[in-house]
Length: 486
Image (cartoon, rainbow, N blue to C red):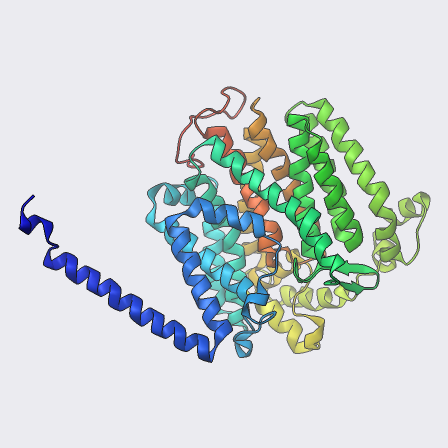
């Protein structure tokens, strides 16, 4: 080897010097920021690392997000929305959202396969909806709240695209679901009991809240419901009783949280499982299993939910009578003040029915008319979308979601256990999403809830088209990436 060849070129030396100078400047900036604003600096570093690792190792980041979904990261930035309070507040959860949306967005634009998935059959209506929502920011009375909600709406779609574009083998896809369940087992069987034993919990009218895991018991219980649906489906396809054990652990924590809408969503979800098994996959053993599990959850959780709703435990005859008179039923139920918000936001929608008042406007409307301590969310996503995006926005969102729903039904007809391990909980998760949206703000629960619905929908499509998928069945198609580009 010649001496000239052994020595670095001028370009190589200059490149090394540039990297060294950049690293030195970044180190000095980080040191200065840590001394002056430690939590803000930690957030910036975390967000930058999240962006860099997502671009380099997207599958690892997607797995991490599925594992830590419900865990509250705000302690890393000094408390719940402890940064930039004058702009509405920002914490590590928000930094995670911004970092993931930016990273997945850049990854999608840079990768031809991901871009084709995003613009193809199961993504184009989402893109149209998100573009319309972004354009509505020109009308909104609260730009910050609108931009925050836009990120929350974009995240599940980008995760859906990321799963379809990044996962290359069925083994990788199966491992993602396994990591999700292992994370749930660690949270329900190790972390939550340990925090309760150490006294790190709060009691709110008999309901147990564990702030470290979630800032509220509602999103935590929604996460647990998704875990139950995935674990239950794995038991029906694999016959392993450890998944039933995980279901029982999750159900116990749901019971402790005493979230009424979760109980209703669980019953609706398992009813969806039964219908799905009967009409789509023709698995009548699955129908029986779904009915048994749904009935068990109803017996265990429904009485407490009814007492919280009506103030007492009504009999079956009284419930049937109320069901025949919707107005009387509505007046008999305790919505904890939500109906006051609903009337105000409905009036806003009626004033601008077609295009709405812009993304984030309902939050500004509520905060103008009620004390900040009441919160700024309408607790009904149907009214929220109607008021902010009008009938046009709701129609676009419905087309996007029903596109996923139809895709899940179509691929589930394959006689492929892995496809059904994703398709059945995806279908039930969409049913649960539609149910929970009646009284809660599911768009805000992108980490503990909507990302799992997107993951399961994408997983069903990927399992049906990845090399090695079982052929045949209605809806069968060619294997290989890019997927979802029909």
